Amino acid sequence: MNTLDKGKEGEDMACAHLKKQGYRIRHRNFYYQKAEIDIIASKDDTLAIVEVKWRLSDFYGTPETFVTPKKRKLLARAADFYVQKFHWKGETRFDIVSIVGQPPNHSLTHIEQAFYFV
View 1 (cartoon, rainbow, N blue to C red):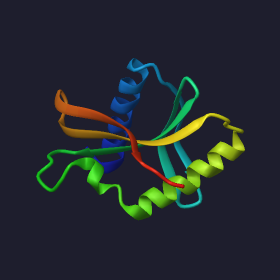
View 2 (cartoon, rainbow, N blue to C red; view 1 turned 180 degrees about the vertical axis):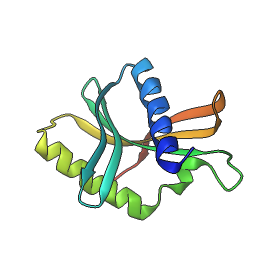
View 3 (cartoon, rainbow, N blue to C red; view 1 turned 90 degrees about the vertical axis):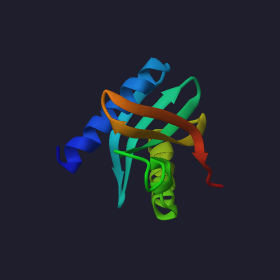
View 4 (tube, one colour; view 1 turned 120 degrees about the vertical axis):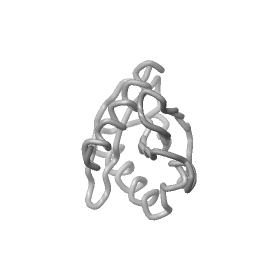
């Protein structure tokens, strides 16, 4: 499986999980300048900007530790653009869906409010 296929599969797993939790998937692979938001989902009056990270093992660290400060900054910029473009009035937060292992023997963790920007 190539990297693009793996990324899509990880995002598919994340979307399925989010839907089970009552989220509405608004967009996938939303691009703004150099940033890509994997999933934009909403639940009640909260918009979740979701980064999906998948690793086959956590030997070198959990997947969420690979969301770098540079990536966070890019996500914040893209999220700000999205909020303005679509006139979002509710709360906005940054989540990470962390996947470890190979299906069906994998673990998936949804980390709400994984990081903040002021």
